[in-house]
Image (tube, rainbow, N blue to C red; front, side):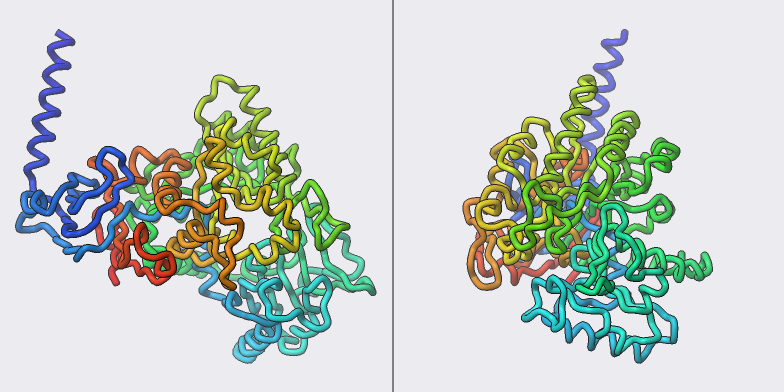
Length: 567
């Protein structure tokens, strides 16, 4: 009897599938080049969507069979359609927050930044904070005068903003520059000691310059948070919604259908969950929790969620930081910086505390994602992972991640593949940071382990891809170009042997990112039964001349069969 019942159910399922196939599609894309990232059917001319899933792929002739009176039909006119881009590592709310402050990314001198602050101060009320992000001293045309380690002194900001605290975050997010008003609010004086994992940069006289590295940022950030705490709950909630909406619109306009968020507090996740349950999220979010161990231990089971709101929100990862960033000399190195021989960088979070986080992650079935940029930081993380894996042989296929994995010792590169650790990297950082990578590390270390995508892939590791937005523009096209070219603005190529092929780069932004989040069964490729997340591009980035890739536009961004952006 059980065997007969199983046969009946199998036959019924086959009948239902046949009936479904005969039903008209809700959306059909035809007359294009559809690259699926599915080896069984790598390319098609047309794709049919029913509901939020892919129903079929085939030829233009097949497309006619899928179209009914209510079917939305898009003629691709030969354009390229691919699985929706997945941002593999970014800071989602940070993108929206960026739009609410001063955008300092294009500044080529410190004087330009001072001028931006001056304009903002003229419009601000006394005591109102002026915030901005995106400056990078290594990208200025000339160093400020005077300066300490290439960073300016706060007097230049004091002159244009004497009545308003100023908080300007480094492009990397691992340093801030502040004025005297902010230091007053944060109780920062010449007598203030460096916090663990941070540094208050001081001049020869021992006075703070205004530059706060790594955990020292907290002195200013806490003062800013105290200012923001004066808002009513309704005002705070409205601003967060605005930030989320701004981030969503920007991501969709760049062809992103899923976003892997590199660390949000529980309160922000609460907002994400409420929006997902109401179907108010315009793209899919996969979120890492960023909270102290005590808070994690009390909440991990309650916050673990998969596919809330028709696969729009998943939370089953934890984020920690082992070190800082190379640009601000906060990356933790095995040997001193070439351009600052008295320093090996900074260890941000206590490795013993991170080890306790690892135990929480494995006990509660969470992925662990640790920020590590310097070769010492990467080694420390790999040591923790190897130790935990050895102690828990019953746990398989954990897919724990190292976020960035930018600068590695040759001895540690094979360990990624051996341990099954995901290298969650950002190709755009390679071409953006390369000019000062050589200054910080010297040519030998840079060649050995800086952005070594091919070496990692040959070790058997999965290399995921992203932008670390808002550190960089969230554009996958710019990041894809960096992956396949490694070409700098001056035309030179940074260690070309580590370039990805075009197919490897596209896989790193689609299937690999899905795999890195345990989501390859629902996204990352276009095949029947998977989510209908599709990006349509104006150029075929797999075949056009390399120098034409950056000029590629996003024509459509489709999430779950719905057109969420159209140029």
